[in-house]
Length: 567
Ligand code: ADA
Image (cartoon, rainbow, N blue to C red; front, top):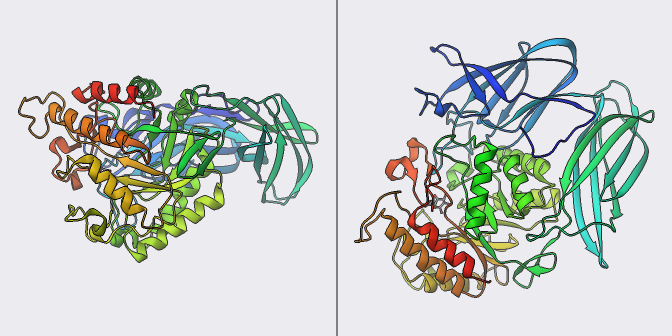
């Protein structure tokens, strides 16, 4: 399953999830379920290398192979011929093989999860880079002229909902063609007059209309609509694409985040796509359970730290009115890593694929970039500038941010712990974002009264380009190993984690100027063994549930604090 709703009624699509053959050098071929991580296969728990996956299917015509995520590099062959290569585990991609004959075809995917100099974003890190075809796969048969994507932007004007729809169309044919479009949404039908498209060309058509019957999408009532687009040639429908959208607006005003004009206060979690049984290839039932737990906890938001998430998860967030900070892929990259010759290109591609594919999710309210990267240096700043500019050009309707860990020494009135070189210089990119976001760990990595720490950071921000912007605590948390108990509150006990989280959250809620918090983190997650930061179990143990979603003591405490806080 690729999405929670059917996207095509005219275009033929076959879901290729199921058993595939997989083979690695020096081992017998075996069959395995796709999507999945190979780490769940006995003997491959820590395998880093190459694996070839194979699947036969029947079809013909212009075959479009759609991959929602392969970790982390995929080279794709159809009937023995290479049709494309893709880098990055966390974004969807597709390749078109035009004019395939009717019959049986062999799809082969060589998957590589090794770290190398050509991989600027997947580096040994405080989360696991798994291996495998980790999200859904489908094959489609597209007409010569087909719909590439449809983007929907809602806006409220004079008390009425409007929607701007941009439709991207591709022509595979060697001659110009003429097509028309028919859209339907929220009780309205829009016919777009015949348009010319060049041979082997692409075009984008944009229309804007009022939708008087539309109801707003809100956290309390997450009303969703199907936006159906049909492409017609000589009056006959030849292709279609269904998207699911909501009518809502996000604005930043006077230091607040407004959803449909009303301030929202974020009580959220950072969540890695990680599970003790499934690695990063979490089945939809387990995603649903995660969201049930988040709702039970009284949370209203998720940050997809530190990469774009599976669309099924985003679909579920849409359905439940959970706000999403979706993040492009990058965590803790030092300046030298940002100067990797592949960094700019791979970052731009990740942002491009994230926004192109996830544009229509009404739950996504914030785009994030470059968690804890070199925002304290001039060279780093130019990367932030480029990435924010790219996002704003693609989607001016959502605010942008970046989680930083660089308060300046001058703000703190004394020594602050040094977590990275240049830490004390402070973040010099706060003028670039729409929302200022800080990762803070008082009580865990250092002892300091939580409220005064948060206040000092906030007041420091007011002396920078970040002044007057909404202020989020994008990470705060403490670690505990599930089942480790002691009345002494020693490190790694559940008691210590509970007490620290209580103090941290009480401080966050008492500090009046912030717009909310994302706790670090929802569940324990594996870290790459090449870079384990001395983490016990080679896991980041700051989850309030463990990797199997067993509740730690902090669960109940956070639940009470989230639920009783009205902000
Ligand atoms: C950081 C980082 C997270 C995680 C966390 C921690 O701030 O953004 O990915 O590593 O700290 O657990 O220390």
